Length: 242
Image 1 (cartoon, rainbow, N blue to C red):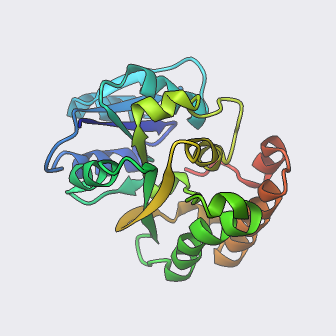
Image 2 (cartoon, rainbow, N blue to C red):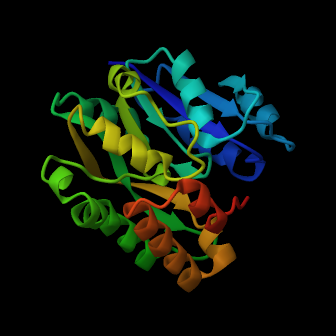
């Protein structure tokens, strides 16, 4: 199986270079890395071009749209969706291939450990780990018993390209919670798994909001989504922070 890595970007010059350096030492290597840019006004595109990864510049920004565009040009049998501020282990590809070799698993993601320049956010990371399980157990209990787990973007979601397109990919109209929506759809094709390995994600949103406010917003957005509140309304509470 071959793996394509897709990174949606918008003004990610501060973090993209480090992420791409980590990807350069993956063993085995992915078949390709696509940076799908939604109109950055900083050096994001130049940074990607300088290290030789594939760059796709799209007309409309929006993570869901950008990831769909990347999936449309990707040649790998397996797709891996990676945020520009997330660092992965050097055996990422082997872990993805081993996990998705199980035909009963439709998608998987990692445990996200949130970190900053001077701190590791252990409490919030633990809550995010548990949320993968308790959110579907509370809001979709019948689906939980069928293997549903809710994964989010900083968990580095991976799936088969065939299953991704069979369920319609990401909903391009969703400004937030597009990964959770994808998990619901992919669960029709198999179980969703949280892999017992760690990736490191930037704490920039928590650092900006503060840990208490961030936890409150995560809970509020998650609960409202679980009971069916429109993602367009939820987006008001989840601003883009670079």
